[in-house]
Length: 208
Figure 1 (cartoon, one colour):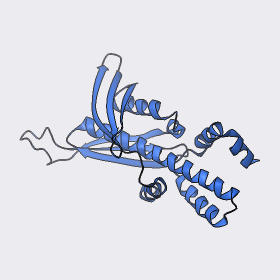
Figure 2 (tube, one colour):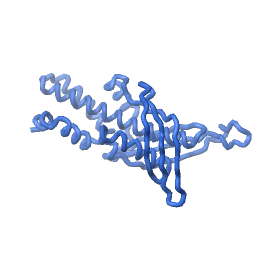
Figure 3 (tube, one colour):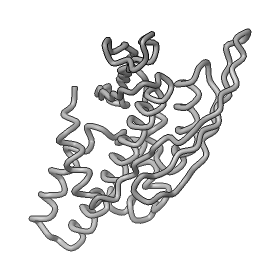
Figure 4 (cartoon, rainbow, N blue to C red):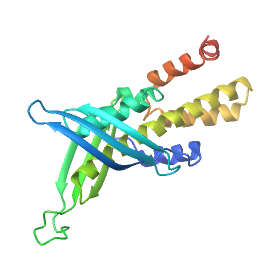
């Protein structure tokens, strides 16, 4: 499993504390138990900027619908999201944390393991007295981590291209080392493909 702490430290450095930090505010769920389909409408906001967004998704359950809703909203800007896949999802009650005499309100510890396109595994977790709240939170934590990873990768890639053009050897070495770390969390092929679409002449010229 990749050292996520090292990655997140580098991401914060590159993005200069402008990372996306999605927080779930509220949601409504319409589930058809006969066909197993769920329709989810969710309100989220960026804890850093306060900007709000509406997430609408469908799937075979709460987590599936929310994940697809997030990917549908953000993948046009961050294509690496389309390459993610779930490896494991778990919920475990935390005994002794109930506040009511029935203990039916005990905390739930939710874990989610996600793999990127290279098969690298990343673990996200959250605990609260709400199973649904923590389930949505771990999905949001996972998706925002990969969004921020891609943003950082693109920023360093572009800085590297500029340093090469300016023939700044020290900067080229520094940026290359950072890319070697960030690529652990980012789908290189998906990101480069988008960069080529955004600036085809510049990228193609550099590769030729």
